[in-house]
Length: 459
Image (cartoon, rainbow, N blue to C red; front, top):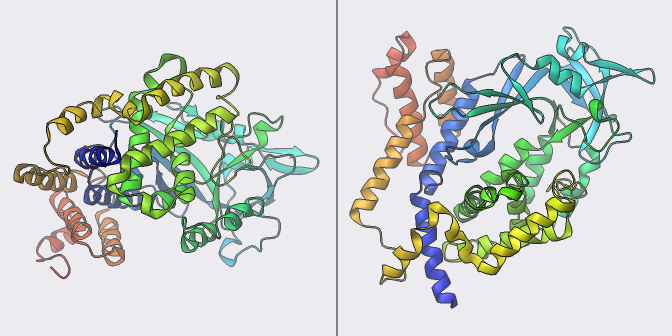
C-alpha cells in the first residue's frame, strides 16, 4: 500500500481507538487518571502504610480483563544505601541497608541496620542470620503478610475482587528507598542526550528513589533472601509523559497481545503487558517526537513490533532501567523462544495488517473501504455520543466514595483541585467527586459543600 493509503488507515485507526471504551480520547484518559489518583490517595494511607496505584487502570486504560494493581508501601520501614545519611524524620523507623553482594543488577539483599522504636513484627520474624548479620528474607516476609484468602503471584498477594467482573486485585508490599541505586546510574547517564525522557523527567524519577518488593532472582542460590527493585512509580511517570498517539500505540500493543498472541496456544503465557510497556519505552527513546502523530500510528505500531521481533530473535529483552537485566531469561528461552519466533514471523509476513486479526479492530477495513474521504468524519451523532460517554465516565468513576472518612476525602479533593492543570475536564471530575460525596453521606461537612454554588475555574 502507498504511503497515502497507510496514512488514511492510520487516521481511521486512531479515531477508532479514541472511540473504544478501553482506550478513549485524550480527555477520557485524563478523567480515568485523575479519578484513579483520587481513589489512591483516599485509600490505604496512614502513618504505617500508603498505597500507589499501578498497572493499566492508573495509566488511563479501561480494559475489563485487567487486574487491579496496587503497591502498598510500609512507611515505618525505610531502606538506605550504605553511603546514605539517615534523615531526621527516619530516626524512629526501622532501617534496612542494601547489600548487592552476589546479586545481579536489579536485585539486592536487605540488612537490618536499626530496629526502630516500634519494630515491624512481620519483618522481625523474617530476619535470618547470614555471617553474623541479620538479613531480611523476601520469601519468609511475603509468607508472613499473606492472608488466608490470598495466593502469591510473583511479588504480589492476589485476591478476588468483590465486583461483577470478578477482577483480581494484586497487592505488592514494598519498602521505599529515597535514593536512586548506585548500581543503576547508567539510566541517568545514558539518557543525557535523549529527546525522551526529558532531563526534568529523569531527574524527577531519580529524585524520588525506588522501591523494593519481596521476590528474589530465580537464577540465584540466594533467591529466598533477595529483593527486587521495583520501578512501578517511575514507569507510571514515563507513561504519563506519553503523548496521546504514543498512548494509543501502547494500547495497540496491549490489544495485539491480548487478542492475537495470547490466543496462540503454544505461546499464550510467554509474553505479558509489561513487555509491551518496556518496548514502548525503548521505541520512544530511539525515535523522534515527529514520528508520533495520528497519521503515522500504523508505522508506530510496526516500529514497536520490529523491536519485539528483534528482542525475541536475540533472546534478550532489556529492562528499561537495567539494560543488563534480560527479562526473557526465565520464560523466553529454548523451545519457548523458537515457538514464539515462529508465531511472530507469521505475523511479520502479514505486515501491519496483522492488526486486523484482532477482533476489536476487524470492522475497520470495511469502514475504510466504504469511506470516500481520506480523513474520518465524525457525525454530530458520534460527537454527541462521545460527549455523553465522557460525562458517564466522570460520574461512574467514584467507586471509592462511601468507604472512607468524608472529611478526609474533601481535603484530598481540595488539594487535587489546587494542583491540577485547570482544564475543564479536571475541574468537572473534581466537582463530580464532591457531588458523589454529598449524595452518599449525611456528614455535616458534605452537607455544607452541597449548599455551595461551585463552578469550574475561569469558565
